[in-house]
Image (cartoon, rainbow, N blue to C red; front, side):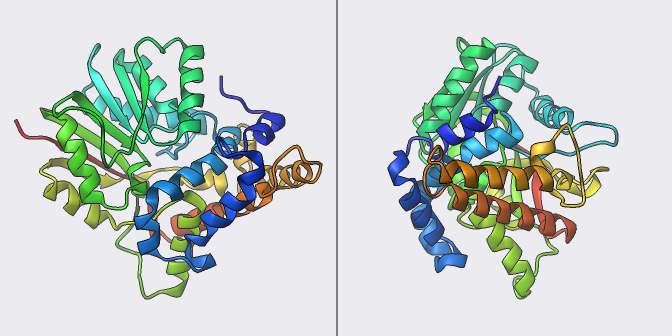
Length: 342
């Protein structure tokens, strides 16, 4: 099981960053974003540093609030958040047609929650690629505890420049991860390279929808809140992802924004008007308690300086995600299934 206590949150905050350097890392991370004078081109040029700092700073908060799978999900009425997350992962495996013993790649795997779930569900061997050392260290430990460390592994590398030969994998998927790429075409082209001919790539992408108006100041504010709170260089339109897939050489089998027909809004766990005991830490009340707990832990020096500021930009993200979801200008689940031709 994933660590989830308050002391784990405090002790792991900052990931591989030295505790004395956390505040400086927070300041540097914030400077990449619009709210602190940064711009999109700088974020894209320095995406490796920006994303690594983000996940060193934010992973312990994610694990504390979400568990091992850091993503949203299409959700039915009567279905718990945890059930919907598992089903969301199983859906990917089913769409890809993953068979026992096949080699699968998880692009931007986090600490490996989906990797372990899909490996057990399909009896396949899943490799996770991730450029964050702290997340890989956590993932390896969790793989060992889950008993999948003999069939699943992690590779520390940039998914824009993967250290795999051509035509290596039987299936590739990405769950809310390739949104960190500075260039969708470059990312998809690299995935195309390592995927075997005739096989498929499926993903859930974070995107702005066609309802997003770049000339609307409120829409731009929401987009910027999501970018700073989630370590993103930019948020692409769904149409741009589709265009990049085709340019990379993929045949798109089908694509859809799964948020559109989700009976339970995907952003409900973060909505201030929603309360749930089963996902209490994600609710507004739970986040308020966490925020004040972090403030106390930082004050008594159990959490490093800068911890409150991480909590603050994550809260800004939650607000932006809910607003973006309500206005239907943002989706975390633009799904596509694409095939590499024979």
